[in-house]
Image 1 (cartoon, rainbow, N blue to C red):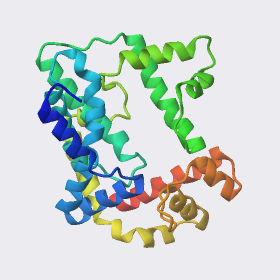
Image 2 (image 1 turned 120 degrees about the vertical axis):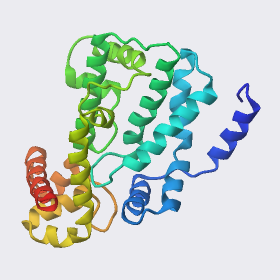
Image 3 (image 1 turned 180 degrees about the vertical axis):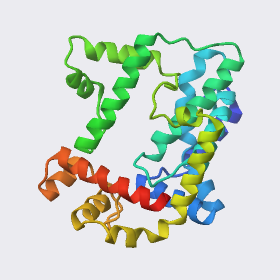
Length: 269
């Protein structure tokens, strides 16, 4: 229970919306992109409001009331819904997290409570995020701090990682080039070019089966398994795909990246 009765009522209302699987979130996102489906857009928003609350609670020590933090986070969530593209591999909540944190962080800055994070913590947190994504690609599961620490192989890494992640809990990693917020901060001209590319990409989505048919059968098979296009709606990890194709993980990834690169060139030219 919170100190604000109105928030308690809001929490109860938000909790009624069921959580979405990755496939369900992607399905709604496709409807938003293809048909401007407002029902799908609203459902994607409502099903992630409790995620905003979860993130907003981490910012309470920075001076803004929880109600305001949630309101700002909801603005970030809406922006994420409008910008999310399921053709790429990111889970919606992973993508939305950047926008939610960015919106809250900006609100905190306006109050004069600047979040100061040591550079060493920032770099270690960014390295953690990248290694975690790599491990997830290889194993098909979310990596823990211990998993990442084993990859770094330095004494005391797990402890330093936990300190860095705690220190950066209210930071949006603007130096990470993978962050959609960092992409958004590029020049206006670059954003116009990117939007044009995205529009062209979406225009050709209905041609995807024909485009896949032009690829080598193995390339098409790997892309279908990676993006859940093989009738299961389940995105497989490179490790799982490698097992099924009897290739190494690195070879599987190389074939995928080469094929998807050719597809993008075809669809964006």
